[in-house]
Length: 171
Image 1 (cartoon, rainbow, N blue to C red):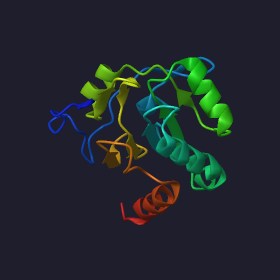
Image 2 (image 1 turned 90 degrees about the horizontal axis):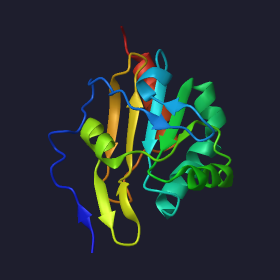
Image 3 (image 1 turned 90 degrees about the vertical axis):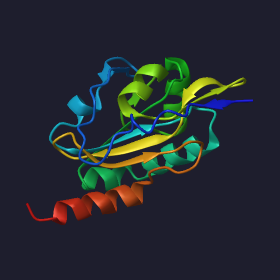
């Protein structure tokens, strides 16, 4: 069968919390760190289950398709999974992914720092469940979406509308 970790409630990040420092290897070199890479701008962090997940494929395709609208809204995006670099690069190419993409994320580190759910599956191994964050320019969390399985995730239109709303608030 499979196992979903059950002790995440105390580790989950809340709105207003500062997003933690991460070091995720980036496809084609370098390292992703949302707190560093999004400094001074709104940003979206997408953790996806893997290249094999049809729901993840839909989400990544939707964000890739919305790249121009996200850029016009001055919203940066990055995504990562536990997939190795070769699988991640193929995934990015399949979707014409225009944003930074990480690979080989360490499940235990990500779970400990973000509270993301993880799963152990006999055919898929140990991976992160879908998790998404919208970060404010100061690196704090505007919105966190934790999923315990494949569904329940950020979509580009909601991200654009929420960031526009946040920008409209006084002070």
